[in-house]
Image (cartoon, rainbow over all chains, first blue to last red; front, side, top):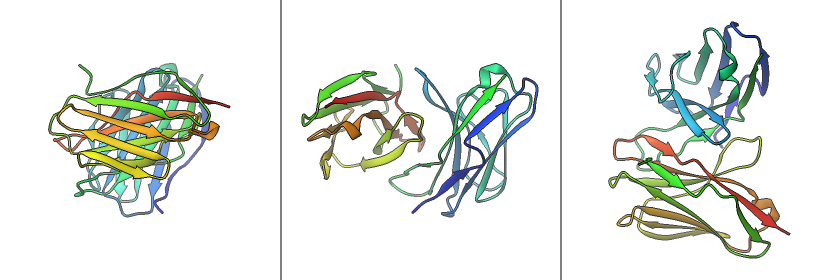
Length: 114
Length: 110
């Protein structure tokens, strides 16, 4: 079974703090994704990566950056957290080159910025 | 036009009934289609995928795909209260990006 883990289930931070969210997958997937999910807005893609040290902006990258130094690990960084970044953050991974690219999700991190 | 659309719901069905969830998409060249279930406060989990026109059955779940109409649906037979969740439709587009719909909230009433 594919396993995607995220470093924290719940996180409370103050405005202006630097926040690191980590995601690790154990299935040797090339692709990794960061989404945020808010009521009424669905899943929105922040950043994704198709390979080590590679990153691509998603639909809402402003205020975020990412790092992928190893294939199994994809980090999301909030350089200076703001209250509008309070959300559920979901990491996902998938195997490339398939007709069917199934994404597998981690348990999510619920971030509250005060 | 949004790339993937779903009825937002909430959709309420009595226990034992058939729940029908619908999804339309805009990219005619889309290749594969996914249904995820998401319980409140949890992350999405894959129920099934389909890439050929027609029906695909897995237990109580049936996915239906009509590429000509750009339409994919999920039928849940003998609905149970444990099926109450938000169902996300996802589409793997012709440019290899997976786009998620906004989700449909389903409530199965005992």
